[in-house]
Length: 183
Image 1: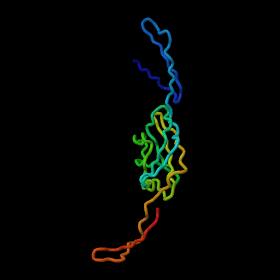
Image 2: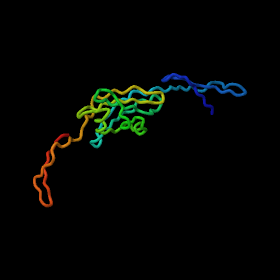
Image 3: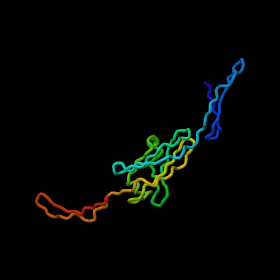
């Protein structure tokens, strides 16, 4: 088997290939059938995003696979909009180069991470995300960011008052405390 490589081709272009065979008696009567091949290009835009709350503690950000451009997607870039309106990465909490994230096309991010640096989102802020795919040729464009989805939820605030002793005996203590009803 003979392997031939053609370099310097344009991306996302169609090329036609064929060949003839020669031996000591001459050339084959005709060429091989024509092979039509398209070179790879950047991945397309990630088509849609999805959001779900997992175990009341995390937000699952998922996305559908884009057209890979003829070359496997090797990573995703997942960016979140912070409280200043700037899109930023949150590192290992949603690492689009992690092969499990590439394969499954989602990551789970805790509300604690979403509320911390660098996002600093507040209660009832919308979790806003955009995603782009990368293959060996390069990166496609970012998806549209979401305008609906999951709102930031928080743990209860610290109780403002100490419990009060109502009654006690040799073996028991009865206490009262303020009940906070925050979601």
